[in-house]
Amino acid sequence: MQNKVLIIYTGGTIGMVQGKDGSLHPFALEGIYQAVPQLEMCDYKIDSCQLENIIDSSNMTPKVWVDIAEIIEREYQHYDGFLVLHGTDTMAYTASALSFMLENLGKPVVLTGSQLPLGMLRSDGRENIISALEIVAGKELMIPEVCVFFENRLYRGNRSTKVSAENFDAFKSYNYPSLAKVGITMTYKKHLIMPQPEGALKVWKQFDEHIAVLKLFPGITKELVDSILHTPGLKGAIIEAYGSGNALTEEWFINSLQDAIHRGIVLIDVTQCKAGSVKLRQYAASCDMERIGVISGHDITIEAAVTKMMHVLGNYGSDAERVRKMLETPLRGEMEG
Ligand code: ASP
Image (cartoon, rainbow, N blue to C red):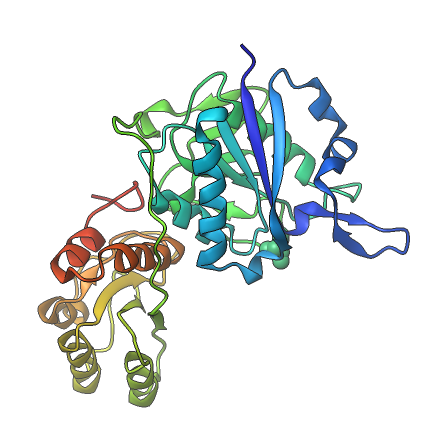
């Protein structure tokens, strides 16, 4: 029987075509065969659908993550895999969010986009769509993960990050190797790919948006730290610290964090470095944070940390112990164990 894939079009640069006046506007999905005529040659069936509102991914919200996940949930039994066409700006956030939402995912969900619109001559979108579709069709290997495909690499979605606003090679995964490389052949690194899940797909749809990212910089003031940590309704904050999770050791800073923890706000320490991991206690500059109960985010990306915190607080927010445990533990391969 022919494999079947579903394209879910959400917007972004990839979906733009140039009008007669030279301006870029979103194309109608039916036009995809015109933009990528090679799709006629595929030996699997391609269906497509699109979100009600096509967006620049800078306008992404948890509500849209739920819309995408609900399409996958509704169509899960009818397709072998799902290709999500998405703007590159927040693609790593959506990929991370979907990975947490889709528990026991047994089929590939691959996000791709492009730096140049499909409607332009030199667009990278055509190659990205064709290769990503091949992976999604799962004829060689069924990858039970949410992934990002870009240029010639398949990444675990919750490990990926956008690194270039210019190059076709726009994504990287610094703390986990790519899952596949596409050249003349597709080379899958099977030992790095998640095993097939045992249970049935379960879709988690709650997100708690009452979180903050507190990025440290030399000269940061108490006023700024306190104003962020006293944001009304705040439930959690991600501290983007230096190097292996180090922060200033000044008393006012540690007191502000401790006060937030006493008020029930959960704090995670992640690193501003692109590669490497938080190692609490490696330096004196992180000992106090560990002592007062800041959780290590290990080698998680900021995109995965933000979406994981929203997911965990949204679904288990009333159980502080569970929230802590889940934030400390890898849920979908998003950080080292
Ligand atoms: N602003 C666009 C978006 O993220 C950029 C892109 O698609 O590359 O929707």
